[in-house]
Length: 498
Image (cartoon, rainbow, N blue to C red; front, side):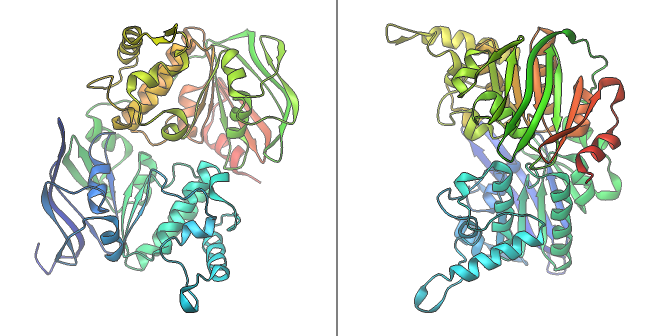
């Protein structure tokens, strides 16, 4: 790299192998000061490995990193911090027992005399930062008591608190609503204006096109192509990443309105939602959509028994049922796929096989002995049925890509033969091809008689795949759209208008 280039950060000829996998193969990637250079690719393309090397979590086998034309060594995250590199992690790295402010300024705490932490200044600075992105969040709240959307916001603030010269944003909008995404993009543009180089990683192609100056496509551990913003649209990016058109849309809605499977009547829960009334029919895919705080995610958690609703009732097959805990919901044939699949949906340090049969573990155990052969047979059946990419079903589930992990979560509920599945942000953090596969699985499940409720803010996905869409605002239903009345503009307006 010559000294007259504008590269502020340059990763040159980076290679990395893991047992049986060539994760990165001679990859060169750079980001200029004052630009957003986006990195995209399917799950397993090598994005996380490349960023892990930049952040000092992973050491490369070969290659060199330059910052301002000088070779640097990044052996651990502390080295990255000292080089003014900051990262907004896709996987949360928060201390659940500390406050919001303590997490934001962890490692960069304001100090008074004699090395004492200035907590007053810390909380004031945290509130200023939260206000700057139009987020109302108490800086004294304990992080472990908050939800995943709030954790994502804290991660963003945590990265900004380090006043970086270079920042990696790995799926930063996965848990944000539309207004907060716009606020984040305003912040990114301000950072660009201050000369900060930003590496932006997302599976949301519309975001990539909106915020990027350049876009690099990584495929199978190699750079496929680098494109300027003016050269691309979503179809071009999909073709470059996948090599084929993966888009599909539901062409009919053949669910049976005469068979009411589930009904919520005047359901209310604290300040999250009030007087919720809707029906779910046999074979239906019902979408719930609303901004952060609308109550859509909490509705699913109440149906599954994670939260205990205050008022109202839940009816299954026209009979009033009581759901006080998840075990009750499971016994009624209701399964739940959480938005945070890694922490709430799977046991990361357990095998693919064990996770796949987790819901039927007792059925596979007789006189204290676990039938491992039957568990293997069941798992291989779902691996084939759901096209889960695995080399060995006894490998840790944590080694799978996001899309394949999501399929394992689905497999464990299919093994239980649930009649109702609740999906909370089912395509969060997975690539465009895996998204299409997940929606195909949902559609096939309903064609076999199952019923589905999906909570998501991905309105185009809901329109392409749902039979009906219910919009919520401030904890109340404000509109219901039937299949023939779907209109993206109207639905977006319905969840965002005051």
